Every structure is written in C-alpha cells, then in structure tokens.
Length: 286
Ligand SMILES: C[S@@+](CC[C@H](N)C(=O)[O-])C[C@H]1O[C@@H](n2cnc3c(N)ncnc32)[C@H](O)[C@@H]1O
Image (tube, rainbow, N blue to C red; front, side, top):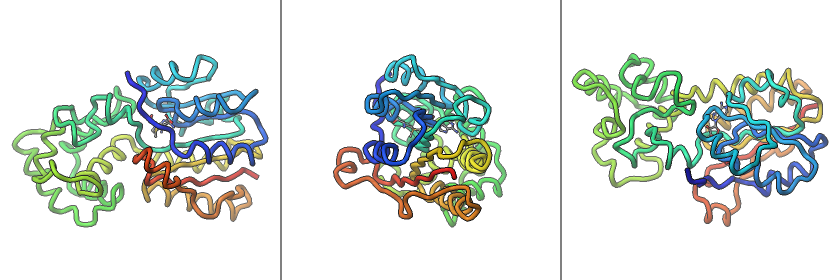
C-alpha cells in the first residue's frame, strides 16, 4: 500500500501546540496514514502519542510510518472516552477522507473508478454500504441525505432516477451510479457528482453523528487545559464545530483560540490541492 496522503496545515498545528499545549500527550483522533502523527513525533520531544481510526487497513499502513510506540485504537473517535487516550493533552480531528481511500481502498469513493463496488465504508466490514443505501432508502430518506450532507437543494431529479434505475437493476458498482449523470466524464469541482459522492460517503459512515457525539462529549471527558484542533473540509462539518465551540465558550467550558478559521496558505494549496477547502478551529478546555 502506498502512502499518498499529505498532512494538511501541519506547521500551523505545530505552532498551536507550541503556543498553547501544557500536557505532553497527543491523540490523533483521525490517524489515517499517520501523516500528522509522524510529523509531530519528529518535532515534539518527550511526548506520548495515541491514535484512532475506524479503518483497520489504513492503520496497518500508518503503523509502518509512525512506529510501534504509538497507542493505536481501531475504533471511532466518538468512543474516545472509553480509552486512556481520553486523558491526552492535545486532540486533533482531521475530518473526512484520506488519499488512501480514493486511490487504494477499492471501495468506490470516487467517480473516477467506475469498476469499483459502491461500498464507501471506512470500517469496510460492518454496516450498510453505499449500494445498500441507494437500493433501500425511501425517497424521503434520499432527499434528507442529499440536502443535509451536500446541500443539494433540488434533489427530486436524482431521486426519481434512483427509484427507476433500482427497479430494473439494483445498484452495485460505481458505474451504475454514473449512469444517472450523463456528462460525468468531463467535470470536476462542485459538479452534482462530486456532491452526490460526498453525500453518500457522509451517510454511509454517519460522519455528522460521530462528530456531534464527540463534540458533546467534550463537555465531559477532557482534562482542564486540553487543546482541541479540528480541521474540516465542508460547511456541514464546520457549522457543527463552530456552533459547539460557541456553546462551550458561553458555558465557560472552552476558550476559543482563533476567532477566524485558519486556512492553508497559497503555497500549501499549490503543493496539495486537497488542502484547499480546509478550515482549522482550535480551543482549550477551561
Ligand atoms: C483526512 S484523513 C486523516 C489523515 C491524517 N491526518 C494524515 O495526515 O495522514 C481522515 C481519517 O479519519 C478516519 N475516520 C473517519 N471517521 C472517523 C471516526 N469517526 N473515527 C476515527 N477515524 C475516522 C478515516 O478513516 C481517515 O483515515
């Protein structure tokens, strides 16, 4: 397996840690291919490290990169309070998807791989796949998914096509889904296909639920002075983080460090286009 994911905003994260962290233990809640952890291990002497990921295959790849002195847990970060890692001094959540998932996982995360199965599960062995959702959701469930997860405001056209298509042949591979989008071969950016894949991936992995649970648990498990750093990649995530930060600040639970989100510098975006929509928010537990 190739390591392909470039850690986003790593210098900014290091600076936040140098300026604000008081307890020398770091928990990478979204370990992925271990890019951030590897970088920080090289920079922070005398620290201990732990990490979570839902995907056992990506953990195998991360372990080769980060060494065996990191306490790695194959679980969702939403369960952090069940592990000793909850006592850490710094928590990083770099949300969303890794390059491994797009390029190597063979789970149908991208419309550029029509032959792959429509799976999209990070945990790849349990729970409904993207195909299950397309074959089984009611029109109302499909509408909620497309509107809430990707801001597709008039999803009626797609829902009609999904219902018609699955009556003839159930969805199974990425190419079955591409047939709903006649011009898929020529587009990039915020084309409906991109948004549609985002909506499905978020639904399959229940990403907003996991994030909301974690944010609500921040009222309970962390020790005082714990530093939290979130990197989000779309408005649905950032909205939830911003709202929770405000509520915790108003309840005297959290000191917000950066009032405006930190975004990657132009140079970083030139080197790594996947970083272009990243937004960082950080806060310290009071
Ligand atoms: C953007 S990648 C992280 C990349 C990593 N920071 C790096 O530099 O290599 C996000 C990772 O979070 C994982 N993930 C997504 N939801 C998760 C959850 N609820 N709990 C734990 N890991 C999760 C994904 O499997 C993916 O590997």
